[in-house]
Length: 78
Image (cartoon, rainbow, N blue to C red; front, side, top):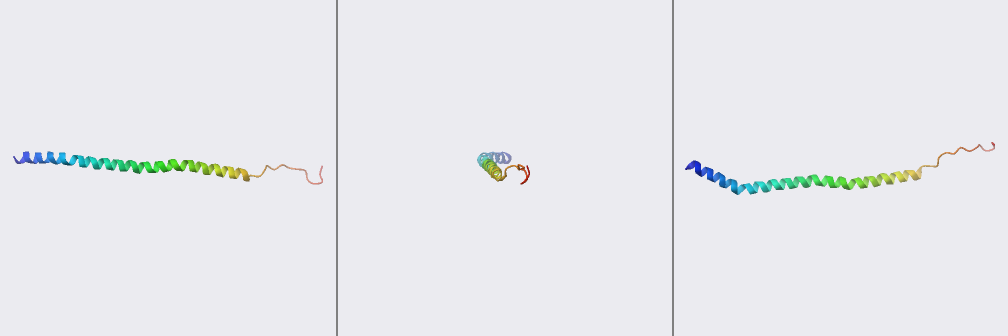
């Protein structure tokens, strides 16, 4: 009788607490997914910004580059 009672108590304990354990596991999984998603979203946002900065620098440098040197005759020379 004692072993059967322990077995029943263990089965009832499992029935009662399994949903709780599964809920905690699901919450942990969801938290991990959110934690991984945030850096990915940040990277997705930084890439276009970095591209715009690079394009802006390129255009600024292109405007600053002087015209190529064109040699001219020395004054008084023909």
